[in-house]
Length: 137
Ligand SMILES: [Zn+2]
Image (cartoon, rainbow, N blue to C red; front, side, top):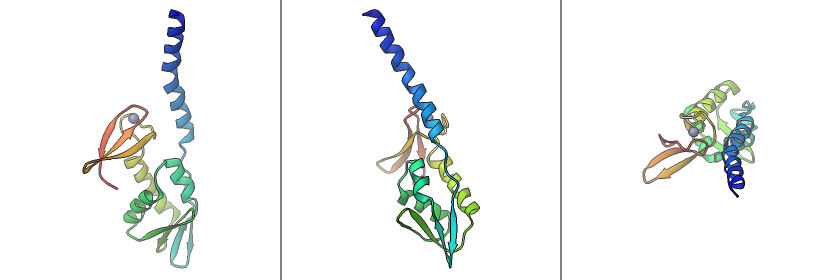
């Protein structure tokens, strides 16, 4: 019985480490694929990016279009911005978003979610348990 308990305990302590490794491999933000059409910029792999980030499309779009200083919308899996932008410019803004709203500043893992409590927003990390106050998107 003692051995069984020890085994169980060891199994439990091993779970998080494996989970971290898996999430580390999973977290590769795809490079932004952007195509300019007329006076609009179509971010073609938007859906792929937000599913890796585990964030809502609306939230990401709000941040990116705000930083670009333009209006944006989502059609299907594509984000569309008014105006001509380069993939590099959108990538740079996306990197800022990831650093501010996805990566945990304590353990640098991406296993986070944004939690709203009363009037404040927090980045809650499921990897290390840290809670970091953030500005609303
Ligand atoms: Zn963390």
